[in-house]
Figure (cartoon, rainbow, N blue to C red):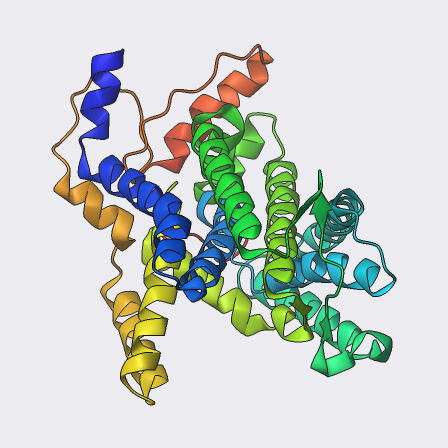
Length: 368
């Protein structure tokens, strides 16, 4: 078992993301030694957006739900800190409870409505919900309206202030590692297999007695909550909350990060977030016309229909033996946990795994 894990770790698809995480863990120490606090904040933002992209990947990459409305949950998470802080509440547990409950309920409501449609209809409905949220917060003049509001009382947990860049970085890094681990386990669990099967062939999943829409709705709600947590971290890091966080452009950026890193992969959102935000920052320093160059690069990626950075790393890895356990496309080896589940669920997992096949570009809606 140990030798198999070490062998899997040597594969580029596994080794590069692990090395990337190790490098990210060293950023605060290097930046502090070099007296460059900017890099702590910059890479903390990358970690936060990697969490949000991983959350969206649960719905988009696994379930095939192309959502242009996930910025709504990022904004809800930010205002879950800003509004209580405006009234002098700095208890982080209160902020977290408001974030989880509000994002969960809004995700359940918007997901239940959106999943009644497919294709372009699903995309437009999620976009409409995000724009509704945007204009709601713009109308709240007490909290800054369109200008946003500064956060004077950032979240405190066990006496630690998330408004401190080092603390925010450590928490964001820990949350990202936990979310990546959970995603890797979920992907090969029966629930994840049903999601992938519903993305490829919803009728087949429904035919074996399971309602694929319920699984997709559950994935959408979990994705919404995780995205809200990312928004909460972002608000503490920047000490500011603005309706601009709810813009559809933010949702589009998250989708680009996922596609750039590798759709439906475990480490893809992290790779995409680092590449996207790193390239953006470098181009900003190089030329004032950076949006044109950046847009052209994204266009070429979409035109070439590549499997993303994770897919590129997988191609560099030697082929697996037939005896090797199923891995994520980016090479994250994982074995499904042993769980006692009803026979119908086992059948669903097997059928869904067959229906899912290789990771492909998802349909825009949850149903075929």
